[in-house]
Length: 107
Image 1: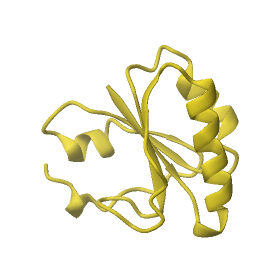
Image 2 (image 1 turned 120 degrees about the horizontal axis):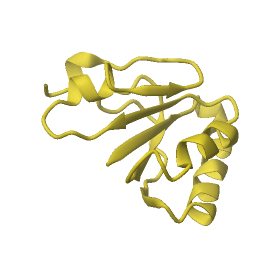
Image 3 (image 1 turned 30 degrees about the vertical axis):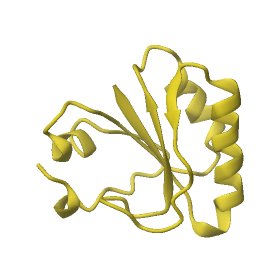
Image 4 (image 1 turned 30 degrees about the horizontal axis):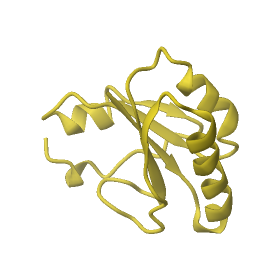
């Protein structure tokens, strides 16, 4: 399983919501799409919304690369118990790499 975190400045919340709706409508290979979080939360350095998907082979990552506009996206595996490695070493970025607040992670 993978998580995608789509980051946006607050002034682009409408664009982020448009992308979120596009994912819901067009991508049946995505397991879950969560609402916008318009504040800092957890290890994330910008407002974001989260997407869960099974694998990178479905074409979702490539689709998201084309659809994301100027928004940065953190894509990471969910290995269970190794959040720091998942969010850093094992992570892939689309767009500008923002990093995460590692001290907020549990491992």
